[in-house]
Image (cartoon, rainbow, N blue to C red; front, side, top):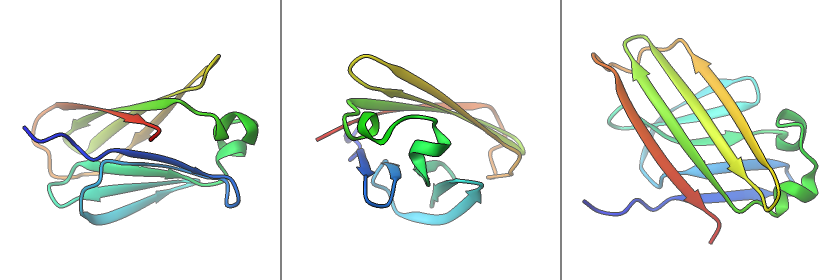
Amino acid sequence: MAKENTKINYNEEEDILSLSRGRKIRASIDVGDFIIDIDTAGFVTGIEILDASKTLQLPEELLVNLIKASMNVTYKPNYIHINLLIQFKEKEKDVTIPLTVDLGHKSIINKRTEFAVA
């Protein structure tokens, strides 16, 4: 199995936190300050958090110094549940994004991705 090309990036100027699995994007779903990218197989391939410091209720200085993040996605028929765990040197932030959307999955599937700062 090939290793995924995961990337995590915080753009301080735009205040956008991006997590990407490095796959080709078929569609993007806008949910408030979250943009969820879907790959050609119907799986979440990335997330962008707009106004990240405000949305996550974290100071920009902390976001600049993030260490790693993980994304756990549970796919169910007509529903997906995304849980992000963002880790800093001395703090963790847990973010949950429940979505009612049909991505074509007929059974329950769990996918976990780890992101690290290069």
